[in-house]
Length: 135
Ligand code: TYD
Image (cartoon, rainbow, N blue to C red; front, side, top):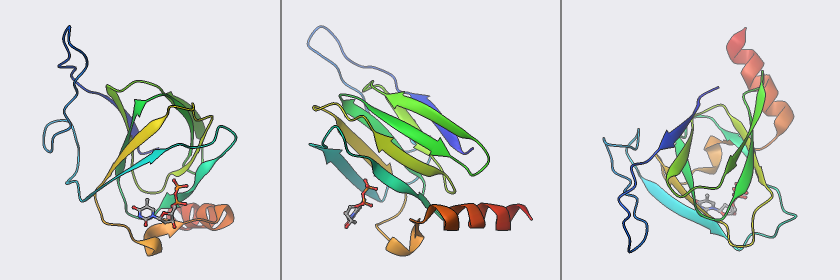
């Protein structure tokens, strides 16, 4: 599964925390888009899609949320709850986010601008695309 947990260097001191996200240092792609998800209700599940090409890196800069990750062959769950840790998700990984804490802010860096054609939003279609690649 094309995912990776990236631990960022912390530059914080007695005044508070600081993490820098920098191309060619700790971000494994050219950043073309940044968005953030916040004020998510606790009983909501977001995501429920995979991308054909897009690479993304997500940081819970505040609070926590649970990721279900699925490449069509195996599934895993990761809780993001640390502002100095990023979750890299490559193409072909189905993701669902749930159990958002009320203060959760998810920062997402992406290597492409928004393109609805890059989304696979139907799970059966996702499995079909995985099988088509494997055969
Ligand atoms: P959606 O894909 O449903 O979000 P999530 O995967 O977190 O559940 O996106 C919600 C809406 O926002 C949808 O209408 C598409 C739009 N959107 C943009 O316009 N630009 C973006 O960069 C993103 C991520 C979403």
